[in-house]
Image 1 (cartoon, rainbow over the protein chains, first blue to last red):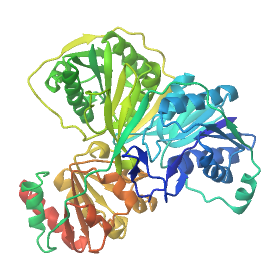
Image 2: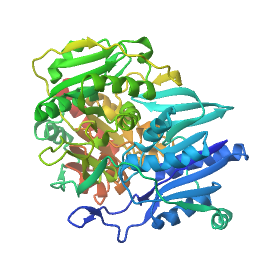
Image 3: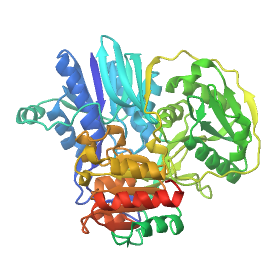
Image 4: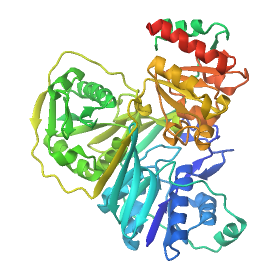
Length: 247
Length: 321
């Protein structure tokens, strides 16, 4: 079996969000970058578990980004995976990125392609679905559990107010979220081994871009909290009813 | 030409988020001076003509039984047919579980740029620019869509439902339905619970509640308010509450009208998931809790004493004895 896991670089979850160049660029100075948590904790770790269950599994990682993404790709390789591919492009357009991944996927005939449910920076939630459509494959989004019996995958997917259990044959694209696996810490052997694993750099193929970010904004600051004394809970309820008008 | 709105349903009931999407789509259509239309797949109990009251002039429906089960590949194909028939220039989805599965597929199929997580109407004075939530609620991006057809998926509670007089014309669409490659084996829903993603009022508990056995103070308040319940990451990680209740940067991002945070300190990752809520109330015994800086109202006090009293006051207000 061959698995491809799509990984992305994002600012750390505690990063301060600010913009430069007249609010057109994300302020990267002083920001620590990490593997997108959904890609790492759920998609990658679940793929590693599948490889542990069947060691003949080939596990590839793919990232679309510049050379500054290499450290997080090495970190992913330290967790697991046989080799990584980086398509050398700084594009932020989902269709362009999906097209680059699909180009690699077509050459390698993966049985399973896993993505995180979204990146925590641009929150597009669209790469998995786009890959599936470009490859004409079934797509199961927002999966919380994944198991495999031969060629048949059983996947749990979140829906409003509950969960749905789906069944589909490979090849398949799945976007992963909480529940799929537990976060792991790379061990020393993994970190040492990651240095010698192949990290192939490919130049992008020609592809369209559909969208472009024209500017960023920060949300308006809150006016400040109105504190109600602890012995006057009726006053809080009155304010919510008469002032905020939310109940 | 039209703006086409995907009307999402579950078990034959149209979802609340679809009324928001319809109201939004109707306004986009008005601004572009084109017709606002909707597409409903599968059997729906509601009267489809009544969707006119959200501003939709025409509803396409495909009543094939196989469409009662959601499949993103099949739905994409059928919606693409409807979009051609209605000559859609803009297609609107709710940015919910099903929307996140279909919209990216449709974007590829129609070569139409997608903005997911939209929070405002598109600006059309210079191009077509849609504001969306980025950095998990910590900022917004204005995204320009460059393709001829545009797809917008709208965040929950980002656009107010607008009702008016009106009846929509309903047209049965005759399209070929491909066989689904994904089989739905089971659907497990917690009955009687308000779905968190769509909820207007949310009561949330954190580590300050000390253990799952104390959750009745959260659920009692939620019940009195008619609110959904949620929790912080440590609470769901410790299995005090189910995973789907986890709100925050790595859980669900929500934007209800009222978010009630009980015993949650307000780490930046938690705030990212809830800071688009219209009104935030924080109950915490620590006056230094960072959440107070992001709150509209707060009580510094012991949740175990304060919250049951709030619940009583809410019941009194609503006339529940």
